[in-house]
Image (tube, rainbow, N blue to C red; front, side, top):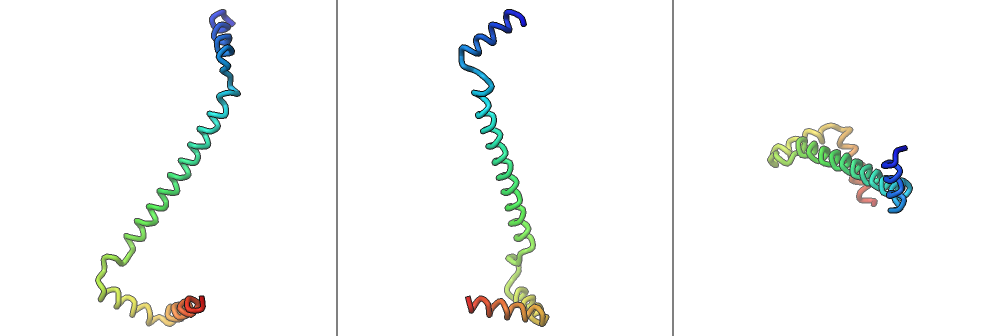
Length: 93
């Protein structure tokens, strides 16, 4: 080691600068970064689901179209049974 490197190390020791002192800060930064990435992915998936609902949703249709589609679905006896079962469970709850 050269004299310059030794003087740098001595200066760092005098300032109580060591890896152990800075390691918790680096670890904390890593945890914060990981939480932000997970939150970003969650927000992205949440917004994507909302946009898919709006794209497939019936909010742009008029009442006549909605009524005819509902009437068409209720002609399916399996769907009508599920709706009746759901209404019954909702009333019991």
